[in-house]
Length: 203
Image (cartoon, helix red, strand yellow):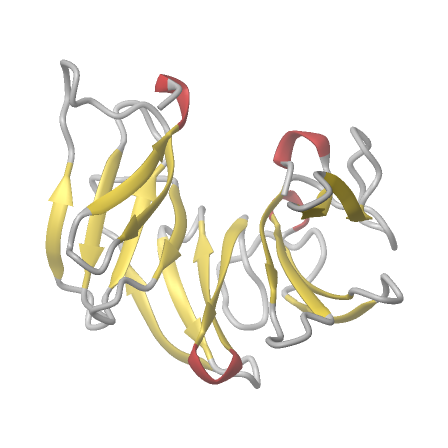
């Protein structure tokens, strides 16, 4: 996904070529074929990958796009309705991480939360992030089954939480070489270490 370019793409690593695109480069919109600040594009169905999901942040929706026809076959949220009321409406969703049994973990910027949905778009639980942090980015599941999320701020932070909403671990440094500047994605490796993008520090 290219948030600032309003396009999502599939790359073939062997040929190093773009083999699929959706969106109009540099032209945000909400109509068929358009996106506005897309984030976290995934192949929703495996194997095959005929369905692609993407959190379309400024359109306040999550799209399910048929890879072959480029048609929107399903949508979570209402286009342009920025209201924190899952699963009916979402406010600036920026994460649509795949969950077991074709579910989805949705991150809401304006809700400061993550919502686990089942395959029928029913809310299983909601995790509210600590109020001292804001702008959650791309919540996902570590191998231990908890939730880890980056906070896209300066200074930034990383937080691990239980599905019940308990903070289990956090990283937040206010100055010096350990300070984060707009981290956008954090994942936990099998050995328990955390790897992340520290965007504005270019590392």
